[in-house]
Length: 288
Image (cartoon, rainbow, N blue to C red; front, side, top):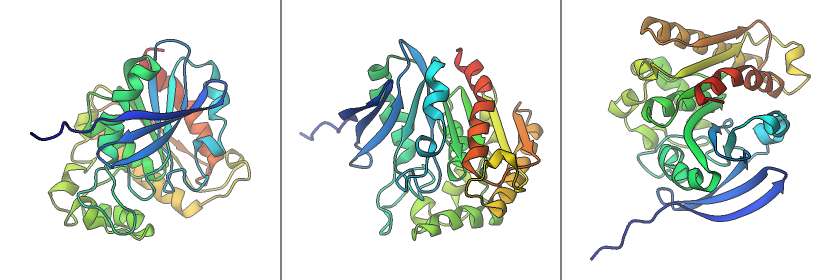
């Protein structure tokens, strides 16, 4: 008789002051514990999953470290969950463990394992939104497509929703290769069936009925950057990607808010502003 499959579970929790805590969750699909910074609402509330950039927050660069996320959500009736980890993973399920970055099953973790334990832990209403920035902007769009019943709203700040054409494969591969990993370990042969399954342009219609918020900037530094470390060429690429995806959504009849800022150079000052500006749209979909 085979053993019952392992289930995700909370294995530790530590207060971070006020409504904030670190909740450690065992992921059976990745066979490891993932830490999550959580802002807990007072009473039953929906949940916003807030993903960070290419370093996965392990590099000290994240919503928690670089924005006013705690203060901003202090008077908002929503749980905010910020997973730590997933550097260079694109927050997707990899087909094969990678020698450089290990095992990644982030879609399974984020859409199944984590909600299964946090919904009862937080008293969630079951209404969810997902938002990502830079690397994880495309991830947020993909997760909303792959798990359509999980999220009512999605926001993508300064990233590139993915395509499976040559340009899209090159873009996605460049992100993975920065971590020394192999794109083939992620989704198999470039442009193959798994890549097509994660092609946001092909599957854009799956976002119908959701609140969709897209934002990016020209790459020209300005006051919105607040003097932070900037990456103008990265933002210019993200701006082109975001504009193209907004056009694709319009083609398939999916309503979206598209903010194209004249100034902004891929900085946390810009991303903080994006989070603030997107919140009314996300909140409306979450019913708060």
